[in-house]
Structures are given as structure tokens and as C-alpha cells.
Image (tube, rainbow, N blue to C red; front, side, top):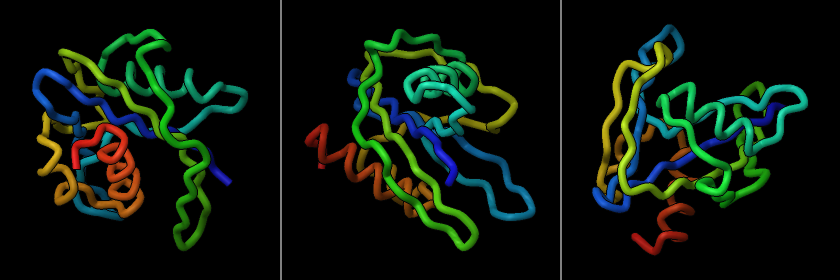
Length: 136
């Protein structure tokens, strides 16, 4: 079983979510997703979230800015089981400096996020975020 984090960043001023564009590779076409990453051996989930946010966006956040929404969300693929911890960051503005892991980013209105998401697990967790924020 692999453990990972997923962090939805919501700009309250823009009423938009940050999505990062992953490049096309031999397994899939280019796609959009929130900040996502693995939890390293011995690493606390919150620290993994803060690390991934910094690595993927350049933003350095304090733990109090990050809110855990879902713990142990299970995702099954043909060859593995993944446990995700899902976080939410609400911000009023945030500069983004992409890592070389991504080829683009955009701030997306809530009603426009779902069609951009490739993975069903991202759509399921995003729905939970919408429900939590009462944006549906």
C-alpha cells in the first residue's frame, strides 16, 4: 500500500482552485490535478503536504494554513492500492513558481474543474472539497 497526499488550494478572492498540468508521457496524455505527492518513509502527512506545496508551487506555508479534509481515502488501480490524505488550503492570493514536474498551471472556477480532471479519484475528492466549502 502506497500513501500520498492531495492538496486543493482555493483562492477565496478569485473563487478559483489551483490546478497543475502534468506533462504527457508513455502512460497517459497531459492532464490537470491539484498538488499531489507521496509521503516519504517516516514523514508526517502534514509535512508531506507542506513539502509538496513548496516543491510544486514554490509557496512556503505554515501548518495552520492547511486543513485535513479526508484521511485514508482509498484508490484502487489495476496494480496497487493507494491511500490518500486530502488537504485544503484557503488563501487570498498566492504566487506560483512551477517545478520542472509540471508544464503549466491555472486558477480554475469551481464549475470548470471537473472536466479538466483525468483521474476519478481526483474528481471524487474534489466533490468532497466542494461539499465542504458549500460551493456545489
